[in-house]
Image 1 (tube, rainbow, N blue to C red):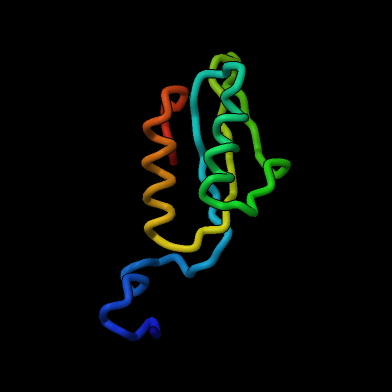
Image 2 (cartoon, one colour; image 1 turned 180 degrees about the vertical axis):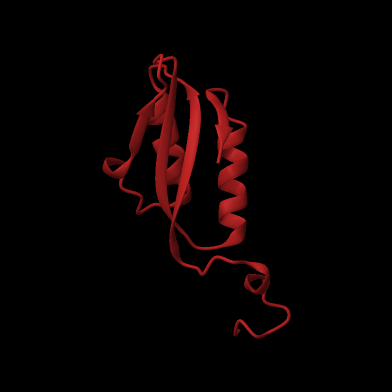
Length: 95
């Protein structure tokens, strides 16, 4: 199937697949938060390397921003990853 095919779902996407795709996740700075997020990233990208995670604490240290960069392979993969992250009890926001 080519990207000029009108039935190809990739035609509506601005992302070329596969590509490296960063996702920022924010939540309370709590034990297990980083592990939970990197575990979810590995569920959706088995080749995800947890050593590449980027962390950023809030000024007061109460919150933690975690950036995971996965290999995005489809819009469906990204949609499901966002849903999974957004519904995790430790997560406050996903960008």
